[in-house]
Length: 295
Ligand SMILES: [Zn+2]
Image 1: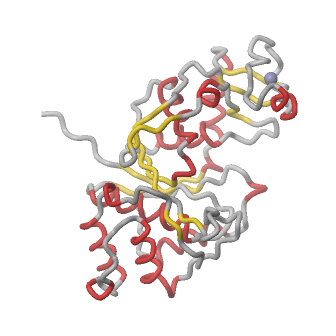
Image 2 (image 1 turned 45 degrees about the horizontal axis):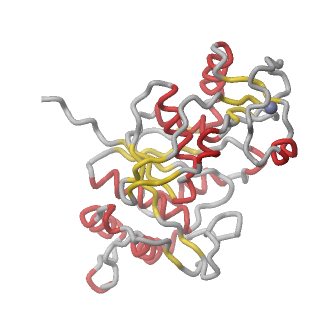
């Protein structure tokens, strides 16, 4: 009998600020899904975009995860140390003409209707100082989410030759994420519902790379009472170590765990997490985005 592949999940925050309640939900959801299946839970720091990062944020995020009892398996991967791998793949695609240099400005693309129409595909421009785009030969217009079922991706988005390295030399998110997940042996991606649209491109990348695809579970987003997603951009406050148990309980509630009878829940952090691992199932997730006040 063939041995079942071991579950490997991950949490991959970008260090643009300290861990906030919205990202705690993604951390906890991916942790529970991995631990429920006796799998590994990895952490990767997505420090791909230095101008948007905050000094000390990566260490602060890791310390907070530890304070909340969310202990990761193995070492931490940093995207800032993965540039050679990203560049090697881009070079291979340039060589095979799967990728090409593009000189179009954002304004030109807007004038063409907002999606890139492949203007530079056959121009054979020199790479220096230009953005690099990938020829979209594996457009993905839908995928199956573990909890939410069939998810549709807009056609124009699915067919676009997207950027894999920006004009300023920064590597693009979709390429880095897929190469890293492959490198780390990730079998399932659990993350916030704000990342549903890029999923199509990422599945397409697995197909172009001829690598086994992963499964996807998108968690509801924590939003403010005004309907804004809780994020570093709208200054969601950092969560604090001394409030670990009540904050974990609040996050568990968003994920649909039966936390309404607080009296019955352990007040000890590690017992609380053990209870949640035992109770957890993706079917508990609510049908809609959850609404919460920011802390
Ligand atoms: Zn172009």
